[in-house]
Length: 439
Image 1 (tube, one colour):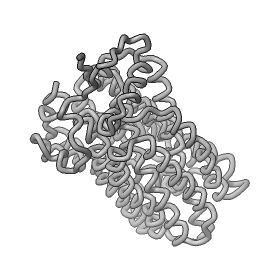
Image 2 (cartoon, rainbow, N blue to C red):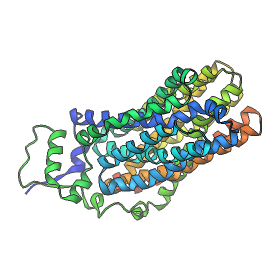
Image 3 (cartoon, helix red, strand yellow):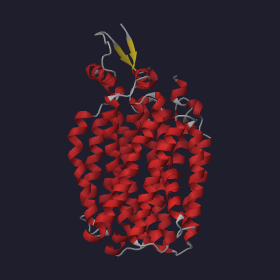
Image 4 (cartoon, rainbow, N blue to C red):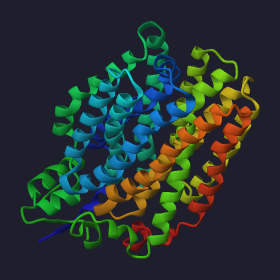
C-alpha cells in the first residue's frame, strides 16, 4: 500500500487548470466582498447629507459593519474548518450581498447600521476562508504570490465601488450602489459546483473518492492505485479546528503578535478607506476628485499586494512585512502635510499599497504559520481580533474630524499604529511556524 502525503503533493504541484479555477472563484469572491466593503466609504458624504448625521455618528455607522466583520472572521473562519469551505463561501456571499443590498432600503442610521452589521458578518468571514483555501492548494514556491494575487480582488472591488459611485451617486443617489450588491447571489450554485473542498475536511469525513478526484484534477494522468492511502500528517489533520491549537507548540506569543499587527494594520486601512473621501473634500477637493483618491488608494493596494507577495517569495516574508509597515507610516504622515499637491495622489497610492497590501501579505504569513487543519481558524482569529482596529478607526478619526483639528493630526493618528505593528511582526517567532516544525 502506497501512502501519499497531500501536503507534499500540493507543495510540489505544477500550476494548471485546477489552480486557475481555484484562483478565479476565490478572486471573484474577494472582488465582490471588496466592493461591498468599500461602498460606505465611497457613499459616506452622500449618506451623511441625506440622513443628516454628524461625523461622530457617521463613524459609528461605518463601524457597524466592522463589528460584524469581527464576529464573522472569528466564527465563520472556525466554522469553515468544521463544515467545509464551500458551504462557508456560499454562506458568506448570502450574508454580505443580501444585507448590503438591504442597507440601500434604510432611511435612518439605526436600520442602516443593523443591515451593515449583518453584511459585515459575511464580509469578515470571507477573508480567513479564501486565505486558507488558496494557501492549502498553492505550490510552495509560489504560495505567497498566489495568495496576495488572489487578495488583490479586494482592491479591485474597491476600485469598482469608486467607479460605480462616480457614475451613480449624483444621478441615482447612494442607494443605487447598494442595490447592485445583490447580483453576486447568482454565483452561489457555481461556487458550490466548481470550488474544491478542503483536504483535511475530506479526510476527516472519510471521502476518499473526492480526494482521488481532486488529486487527478491537480495532476492529470497521475497513476493512482486502488489501495493508495492519503494523509496530510498528524499535525495537519488533528481532530478538528480548536482555538487551543493556535497556542500549542510554542505559538502563544506569536499568535498574540499576529493579532496585534492585524489590529494596527486594519486601523490604518479603515481609517483611510472610511474617511479619505471626507478628508480630501475638506482639504478643498470636489466630491468627484475626492472619490478619485479612493480609486488611487485601491490601485496602490493592488500593486502593493502583488509586489509584496513577489518580494515575500524571494526574501523572508517577516522582513518584507516590517518594511511595508514602515513605508505605510511615512506615507500617511506626509499625506497630512501635502493634501492639495499633485504628490498627494502618489502618497495615497503608496499608502494603499503599504496598508491594504500589507494586510494581505500578513494574511499570507498567517496562512503559512499555522497547520493546515486550523489554517482558517488561525487566519480568522487574526482577522477577527484585527477588526477591533477597523471598528475603532472610523470612530477615532470621526471624533477628530468633528473637533476640527488641523488636517495633519488626523493622518498622524492613522500612522502611529504602523510603528506598533512593525514591532509586533519583528517579535514573531518564525521558528514555531508549521512549515518549520513539520518540514
